[in-house]
Image 1: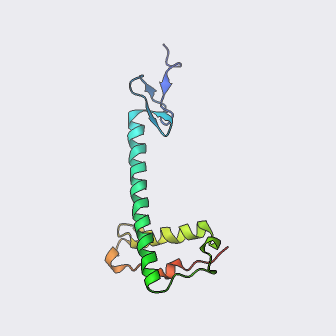
Image 2 (image 1 turned 120 degrees about the vertical axis):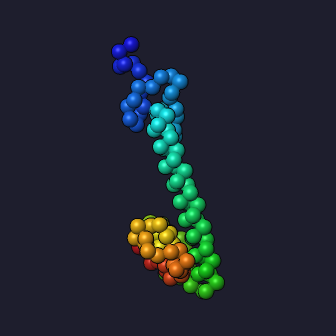
Image 3 (image 1 turned 45 degrees about the vertical axis):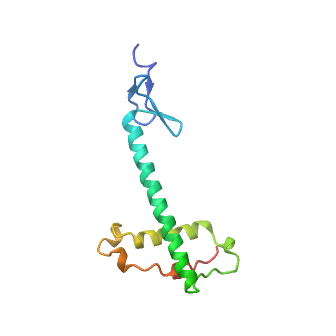
Length: 121
């Protein structure tokens, strides 16, 4: 066999023995690429869990203070992309290890709901 008929990792192109091939999201990869992809996915899921907790806490605080403000009574009119940008902004403000807030701790950051005042597009 000259290698042209070999199974290759779809990410890095490494030749795979039949017992080395792994699937990640229905893509055939080598063990090293599978490990990296799994770690990235795990980290992303952890960030999303923290983001969800931050959103819930921010909404709780905003509701307690009567500060949930949308341009109209129907929250559906708020552009999804704009709302997501605001939520991600809150995440980075509340994350002490984010590069833009390296000198600020989470305890000094407020989840003031004014960040939830978004306009529709």
